[in-house]
Length: 158
Image (tube, rainbow, N blue to C red):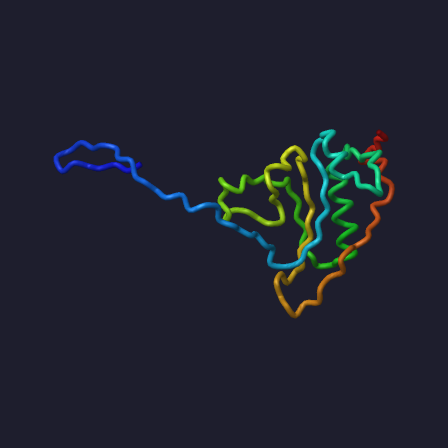
Protein backbone atom coordinates (compact mmCIF):
# COMPACT_ATOMS: atom_id res chain seq x y z
CA UNK A 1 0.00 0.00 0.00
CA UNK A 2 1.16 3.50 -0.73
CA UNK A 3 -0.20 6.98 0.02
CA UNK A 4 -0.64 9.57 -2.72
CA UNK A 5 -0.71 13.20 -1.52
CA UNK A 6 -2.64 15.80 -3.51
CA UNK A 7 -0.95 19.19 -4.16
CA UNK A 8 -3.78 21.12 -2.44
CA UNK A 9 -4.12 18.83 0.59
CA UNK A 10 -5.73 15.47 1.08
CA UNK A 11 -4.46 12.06 0.19
CA UNK A 12 -5.61 8.62 -0.88
CA UNK A 13 -4.39 5.07 -0.46
CA UNK A 14 -3.12 3.10 -3.44
CA UNK A 15 -2.59 -0.62 -3.84
CA UNK A 16 0.89 -1.43 -5.09
CA UNK A 17 1.67 -4.74 -6.78
CA UNK A 18 4.72 -6.35 -5.19
CA UNK A 19 5.90 -9.60 -6.75
CA UNK A 20 6.49 -12.53 -4.42
CA UNK A 21 10.16 -13.46 -4.67
CA UNK A 22 10.00 -16.67 -2.63
CA UNK A 23 11.91 -17.71 0.45
CA UNK A 24 15.41 -16.46 1.07
CA UNK A 25 17.83 -18.83 2.78
CA UNK A 26 19.63 -17.29 5.72
CA UNK A 27 22.42 -19.04 7.59
CA UNK A 28 23.56 -17.90 11.02
CA UNK A 29 27.01 -19.01 12.00
CA UNK A 30 29.06 -18.37 15.12
CA UNK A 31 32.48 -16.92 14.36
CA UNK A 32 34.29 -19.51 16.52
CA UNK A 33 33.76 -22.90 18.06
CA UNK A 34 32.15 -22.89 21.48
CA UNK A 35 30.92 -25.24 24.17
CA UNK A 36 27.25 -25.43 25.09
CA UNK A 37 25.35 -27.04 27.96
CA UNK A 38 21.59 -27.20 27.40
CA UNK A 39 18.80 -27.49 29.94
CA UNK A 40 15.05 -26.87 30.03
CA UNK A 41 13.36 -24.21 32.14
CA UNK A 42 10.21 -26.30 32.47
CA UNK A 43 9.14 -29.85 31.83
CA UNK A 44 7.03 -30.95 28.89
CA UNK A 45 6.32 -34.64 28.43
CA UNK A 46 7.21 -34.36 24.71
CA UNK A 47 10.85 -33.76 25.62
CA UNK A 48 11.27 -37.27 26.97
CA UNK A 49 10.46 -38.61 23.50
CA UNK A 50 12.80 -36.05 21.91
CA UNK A 51 15.76 -37.39 23.86
CA UNK A 52 14.96 -41.09 23.70
CA UNK A 53 16.87 -43.06 21.08
CA UNK A 54 16.91 -46.66 19.93
CA UNK A 55 19.82 -47.35 22.29
CA UNK A 56 18.86 -45.22 25.30
CA UNK A 57 15.63 -44.77 27.16
CA UNK A 58 15.05 -41.62 29.20
CA UNK A 59 13.85 -42.60 32.66
CA UNK A 60 14.90 -39.70 34.92
CA UNK A 61 15.41 -35.95 35.02
CA UNK A 62 17.18 -33.51 37.29
CA UNK A 63 15.17 -30.63 38.75
CA UNK A 64 17.43 -27.74 39.75
CA UNK A 65 16.02 -26.26 42.97
CA UNK A 66 18.69 -23.60 43.53
CA UNK A 67 19.57 -22.19 40.08
CA UNK A 68 22.12 -19.63 41.28
CA UNK A 69 24.13 -22.27 43.11
CA UNK A 70 23.94 -24.62 40.11
CA UNK A 71 25.10 -21.83 37.76
CA UNK A 72 28.02 -20.99 40.02
CA UNK A 73 29.10 -24.63 40.27
CA UNK A 74 28.93 -25.31 36.54
CA UNK A 75 30.80 -22.08 35.72
CA UNK A 76 33.56 -22.99 38.21
CA UNK A 77 33.81 -26.58 36.94
CA UNK A 78 34.14 -25.54 33.29
CA UNK A 79 36.53 -22.66 34.10
CA UNK A 80 39.04 -25.22 35.38
CA UNK A 81 38.82 -27.09 32.05
CA UNK A 82 38.95 -24.12 29.67
CA UNK A 83 40.63 -21.27 31.60
CA UNK A 84 40.16 -17.82 30.15
CA UNK A 85 37.08 -18.73 28.15
CA UNK A 86 34.10 -16.41 28.48
CA UNK A 87 30.92 -17.88 30.00
CA UNK A 88 27.40 -16.72 29.18
CA UNK A 89 23.98 -18.11 29.97
CA UNK A 90 20.50 -17.21 28.78
CA UNK A 91 17.14 -18.54 27.78
CA UNK A 92 16.94 -19.55 24.13
CA UNK A 93 15.08 -17.21 21.78
CA UNK A 94 12.72 -19.10 19.48
CA UNK A 95 12.68 -17.68 15.97
CA UNK A 96 10.03 -17.72 13.28
CA UNK A 97 12.26 -17.81 10.19
CA UNK A 98 9.77 -15.81 8.10
CA UNK A 99 9.31 -12.99 10.61
CA UNK A 100 12.64 -12.47 12.31
CA UNK A 101 15.25 -9.76 12.26
CA UNK A 102 18.26 -11.88 11.44
CA UNK A 103 20.74 -9.12 12.23
CA UNK A 104 19.45 -9.09 15.83
CA UNK A 105 19.91 -12.82 16.48
CA UNK A 106 22.76 -14.47 18.34
CA UNK A 107 23.47 -17.92 16.87
CA UNK A 108 24.44 -19.29 20.30
CA UNK A 109 21.02 -18.55 21.80
CA UNK A 110 18.43 -18.99 19.06
CA UNK A 111 16.50 -21.93 17.73
CA UNK A 112 13.61 -22.58 15.32
CA UNK A 113 10.25 -21.80 16.91
CA UNK A 114 8.93 -25.33 16.32
CA UNK A 115 10.97 -26.27 19.42
CA UNK A 116 9.51 -23.54 21.64
CA UNK A 117 7.82 -26.10 23.91
CA UNK A 118 11.33 -27.11 25.09
CA UNK A 119 11.86 -23.78 26.93
CA UNK A 120 15.60 -24.30 26.61
CA UNK A 121 18.21 -22.56 28.74
CA UNK A 122 21.85 -22.59 27.64
CA UNK A 123 25.25 -22.06 29.11
CA UNK A 124 27.94 -21.32 26.54
CA UNK A 125 31.70 -20.88 26.73
CA UNK A 126 33.52 -19.06 23.94
CA UNK A 127 37.29 -18.78 23.52
CA UNK A 128 38.95 -15.53 24.59
CA UNK A 129 40.26 -14.89 21.08
CA UNK A 130 37.12 -15.60 19.06
CA UNK A 131 37.72 -16.31 15.42
CA UNK A 132 41.53 -16.32 15.53
CA UNK A 133 42.51 -18.98 12.95
CA UNK A 134 45.90 -19.42 14.64
CA UNK A 135 44.23 -20.81 17.78
CA UNK A 136 44.20 -24.62 17.93
CA UNK A 137 40.80 -26.25 17.78
CA UNK A 138 39.47 -27.11 21.24
CA UNK A 139 38.59 -30.72 22.08
CA UNK A 140 35.15 -31.91 20.98
CA UNK A 141 34.07 -32.73 24.51
CA UNK A 142 35.02 -31.42 27.94
CA UNK A 143 34.13 -33.79 30.78
CA UNK A 144 33.44 -32.09 34.11
CA UNK A 145 32.25 -32.99 37.60
CA UNK A 146 29.89 -30.88 39.70
CA UNK A 147 30.04 -33.19 42.69
CA UNK A 148 26.89 -34.14 44.61
CA UNK A 149 23.91 -32.01 43.60
CA UNK A 150 21.84 -32.77 46.72
CA UNK A 151 22.07 -29.15 47.89
CA UNK A 152 20.80 -27.61 44.65
CA UNK A 153 18.88 -30.26 42.69
CA UNK A 154 16.63 -33.31 42.91
CA UNK A 155 16.63 -36.45 40.81
CA UNK A 156 13.20 -37.54 39.61
CA UNK A 157 12.72 -41.11 38.35
CA UNK A 158 9.93 -41.60 35.85
